[in-house]
Length: 312
Image (cartoon, rainbow, N blue to C red; front, top):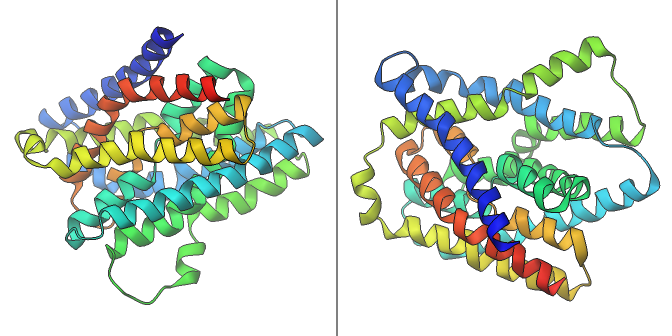
């Protein structure tokens, strides 16, 4: 089982980096450059990501058990992100503003979609995918509020604009999608099909954009920046262990515990680079951090899965 988990995680990362490599090559030959890619971040931000969120609600089957499981997983997801955000802020509180915001976001937000969902499906089946999908809801709410605040303001003591942080594509999409699930609304095909097509663009577009940033990153500086490896230590080992212990202590076990451990131990979210580009932060540092943490997760994710299965 351990070797199988290693192979599954390795395959997901390998698929991701094939797309990244295509983006990097496209940048080097001038077909799709970093400058063009930056203009595509709004496409992801305002159209593709909301389609993914709404689609996740529309594909869930409504019944009393799924409703109970959904809200339990959502509550656990909120705990997961509150703890992650708090610890990441404490650990990287002394960093300068431009770098600190990248480190804090990289620690607090994991790749709940591309890495966690396929891995949960392979290890746990449909039930695992369902629980990880519920965690994505809390991820979207937090990343589009606290996450944007962290990246945009970089830890500055500024006035908190609650309206601006709540009225954003991520949270609005949840407001639209949740009633569709609770009321078992089936969207007509003329709406559902275009939405599915748009949602399917999420991973390839994000990875191609990421590839252009990788192409313009100086990787010789990675090993000179120990803080990137500190991000990996906190994101992939310390936080998952803390959350695994906390969830187990309150009685969570079985498939839900393993699914939560997969979500907690997922590498840094790809949208770290997207948000860094949108808010004029250090995209090179963001790309380096995502790349390093993703590679290291090939080893750490199977360990966390095996540990959750053992204690749960």
